[in-house]
Length: 473
Image (cartoon, rainbow, N blue to C red):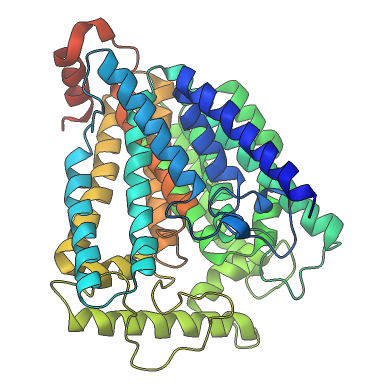
């Protein structure tokens, strides 16, 4: 009881120091946001790793019920600081960049989903919960686009991601080897679900370095971390992360092949060796359940679950029932959507998961169908306009850039976007705040790449010419 005031004092001091640093250098706010996304869990874990007890995405029980989360207040504070500094310098407070209109269209439908849900009797608290991730996605993009000014800052972002995910890998290794003594029986995961996604993205970054152009220090750092990343990812047992890793690697290889003609022979050699090895590994090891065979077993079980594995079979069955319920609800409101804050309507009652997830009838695993069900067909198309713009513009930026290091970043962000879409289809990842903040930051950095190194004294006309040149087909 007496320790609580000390905790509050330490927290207040940390907030004061962070706010002062952000006011002096707003880029610190972006770094802090990125670090929180990759390092801090949104919910406490069964086996604590310290970072899961930091109240970043929720308030302590004594302060529960506040309108906005600490991470949201931090994000808004940094945006206000950035907007004021730009206005003071005679510029537009915030520049929306190339993705402003795709975001505006999609967020218009998000607002419609909130109004429609509220008018139809939706629960206000759940309306806010469902709409919040999309707002965070936009705000994180807006922040990154407005504060990044140099290639060095983009490299710093990558370092934060590499080091942060490396820490998560070491935490996972500690839980697996020290706490559980290498035994995963009775534990479906040992880290947060989204941590497997972050682990996979850093492995894909390593692949991008190998396929296209490498920063020697960052490449070496990931190479040293690679065994820990792999072990932690396998121990966390998220099947969709393996598929995301494969998809991201394929995207990275394809873009590197298209954009780097001198490396095509080397890339074809990598493909001719790597593809047969992957196929052989999956076919040879998928019937096994040993630790090294878990990725192969997990990939196959997504499509053909082993009847002997009760949990996997039940998980696949539940997701199939959930998807059927979402499609049934979509058919009832195909154009306008059901709106936020109202439960979807499965034709067959779902198993009661309220003990683990109080909102299981509102927020399903399948984030793609979730948006379709909430916003209707046109709102669903607006989501794809946004994601498609990020992918297509990112690929065009990669094609137009002459700086190989910056092109590497553009390839990486395109791969991460496709990975996010894949995991969102299976595992809440459009709802999880860590994921949307991560994607938003990377999207803003990617859209800013064409202007980095340009003479900012050329004024707004030169600025917009640089952006247009970077994304013109």
